Image 1 (cartoon, rainbow, N blue to C red):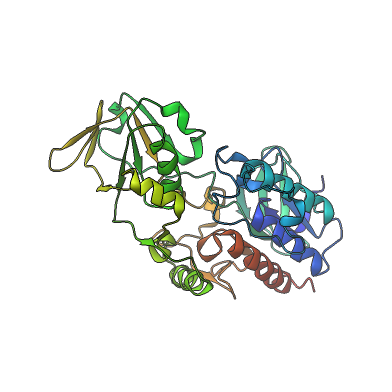
Image 2 (cartoon, rainbow, N blue to C red):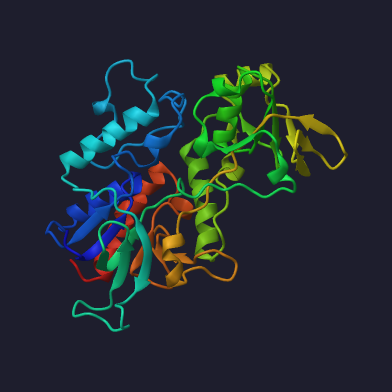
Amino acid sequence: MPTDFDILVIGAGQAGLSAGYHLQRLGLRREHDFLIVDHAPGPGGAWQFRWPSLTLDTVNRVHDLPGMSFAETLPPDSQTAPAAIAVPHYYELYEKRFDLRVHRQVSVTVVCDRTEDGSPTQRGPVLNAETDTAGTIRVRGLINCTGTWEHPFIPHYPGAETFAGRQLHTRQYRTAEEFAGKHVVVVGGGVSAVQLLDEISQVTTTTWVTRTPPRFRDTTFTEDVGRTAVALVEDRVRRGLPPGSVVSVTGLRLDDRLRAAEARGALERLPMFERIEPGGVRWADNSFQRAEVIVWATGFRSALDHLAPLRLRGPGGGITMTGRLATQVAADPRIHLIGYGPSASTIGANRAGRAAAAELTDQLGLR
């Protein structure tokens, strides 16, 4: 594989494929124009690792990639199809249709600024992307689409290491049946938390705890609600603050599944416990809940550790973003982040892919 490219796209999920499509549309079709690498063994981004019970009728929505609809890849009566099969199949067909030539199993371990001796190359200042299987890739610009799946977040609570039962993160969840006969504490107030709570509460007893009280909506999410949520997150990253939670703005939609969970008593939420003990969890008022399992549905953080040498983060831990859709790193305009802040959704990734491709090609004088 050649090692010199104008642009490197890291990640071949929704954001990476969208960026690749738009780079092609802008005329970057030569061998050294851009390269897409992905760490996974096959197409599908994070979708290929989702739990089997997450079907197309339980996900919020799978947004079309640009230029090819998801619906045309689905067989009739496909709503009960596992998302971990249907979405990767769509991505695979998409890659083939537009000849995106994703290079797989390639993990970018670190990105450094310039060459080993600190001088620019004949192509101008470069970024060195060191990989585990393809050596060092030298590029002039970077579109980072690594998302969050590889960086699950579990908050620390006193006594966690003493718990005698099982602790797992959403990322490790497979099926509710494995918890039958055990009391499960589900921690978290996001969409994934209530999806897992719904499933697990149908086979065993559960306790739901969240840091702040959840907000439920009876109405569907409108475009206005979505735009408001994105705008608030965008404002934060433009000011260099860490991205906030979109759910804190939109709330949780109370659909038929969650109404059934509510009827079972599964949505009776408790505040966060104070500490974890070998046999369960204890609150500040000394009340105790026996438990054999703790499910941490506490979300993810942006998987950006490989960019640490570039020192993009500010004192508060956020990255100041700029550009039309806040994908461009203010401190280094050669770098665009998709999946960070306002672009951390499938529809946001589509729009951000187009903006990042256009702004970066302009920045590098490629059109």
